[in-house]
Image (cartoon, rainbow, N blue to C red):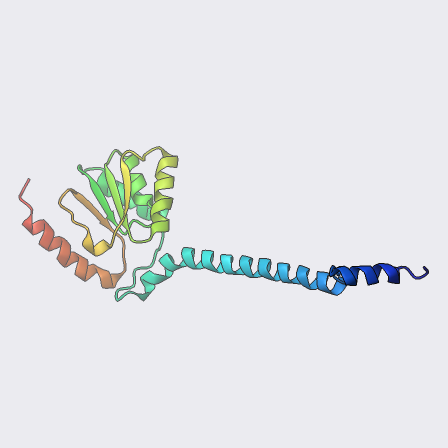
Length: 182
């Protein structure tokens, strides 16, 4: 038969048996449908991942007192370490962010603890402490800054926004006034 294709006798037999091969248009739509599902899955998965990563960084800005993550500069860390040189006892960093201050204090021989609300930053801080070899003396916890107790700590480090200062000063003053003298 010229022009290619399936001979008419074969088509007649296939129609009678109930098996009709899909035409090229049906096969194409099946391929398009598969690509559509794959594309939708990739876009949906990407959006979920972006939401999961971005939410802990965005939600602090929506609180009554905005507490954004701003990494400590090398100069700020140097100043904290300088202030700690003549001090002893465990240290707590309220809102420890990426853990730079806690890790620097641990390198100076302090037992240091960081409290941070953002779980991604806590996990990153733990990773950095492990990488720097101070994971035994630098600990990080996911916690609301306003719910931390200070009874175990002799040194308190707070970097924050001015609106936070007044409230935290009152909290610290009340806490330390209740402690027995050493």
